[in-house]
Amino acid sequence: MVPNFSRWEIENLPQLFEFVVEILLILISLAAFLGILYAGFKYLTAGSGEITQGKKALLNSILGLLIAALSLGIVTFVIRLVAGE
Image (cartoon, rainbow, N blue to C red):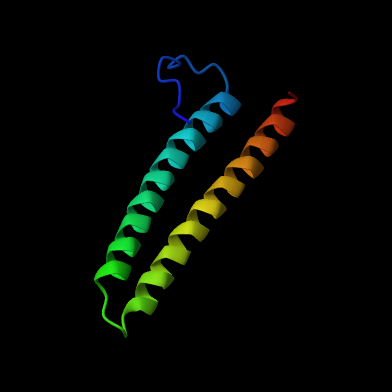
């Protein structure tokens, strides 16, 4: 989901909010992807006692991505409700 950067002509407040939410979702997705890579590296290179840290980091990254996706749905719903679409 890449935002349409050719759409710089934002005409109203709901469009601005949608644009900002799209940018934030991209940044959060990138952070979650890097977190998953870090967790996988930590898991693969960990000794017997440190495997738990890798699992915990992986779970946190996946939960963060899930929360971001749910928040996108909620924000989009509220914006469309307020805008009357």
